[in-house]
Image 1 (tube, helix red, strand yellow):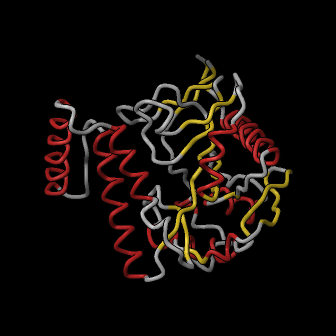
Image 2 (image 1 turned 90 degrees about the horizontal axis):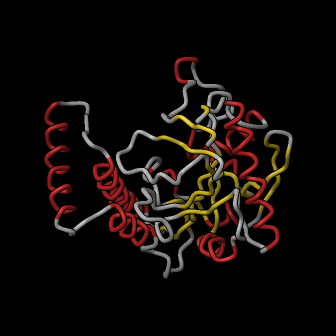
Image 3 (image 1 turned 30 degrees about the vertical axis):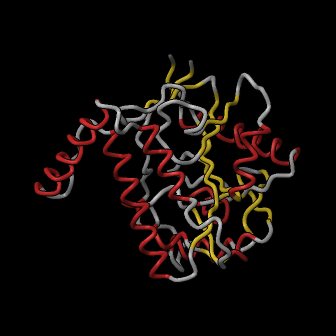
Length: 274
């Protein structure tokens, strides 16, 4: 296999996004740029210079529908825990089958290549204290999944490292007797993420990851419609309340570049052409 350059990874990711865009337009599905991709579009008109991935969000109903209408295609595949054994995420990905992405997690599905992450938008409670507790539940489930995937866990202190590895031992033991597995944990995570979806509230957000916590909580009105932003010389949809969303995630000064020492990717993988 030949290792991909950063420019090749970016170009490949844009190709995936364009295919998603085509499928969504054909089937009248809503999606929006999100996270660092949205920030990159607004601040740089493209990728954040030290980043290399693309993230999108979809309303839960559109997200589920995407898996139903995805066309048979040799190059692009849409993956989630429902259709891929040992898939280590509670959200979906569209991958380019011509590539392989090696990530430093023990049970990463070998089918994963260069990808675009797809996060469903789920309902969140109106009450901030209830929402904060909910995100703590999400963080615990994320940690359980991370422990299941990692051969050894290091923390900031020796005590935390020992505690994490004790939990890891019991997870491994449970896995051996069939009590738990990556598939079971991601299924539980997905169910937890949809905890409030049968309720009518004024807030929503991404609940299949725990990175931003309560900062993911947004008024429903932020996703009422799409506006188009420039990303790598093309136009893609962003949520109409993108300024509010970015301010919650990254602060009021999100249009300013961070200090040089903070301009680093948070990803640790290598990608290859098959």
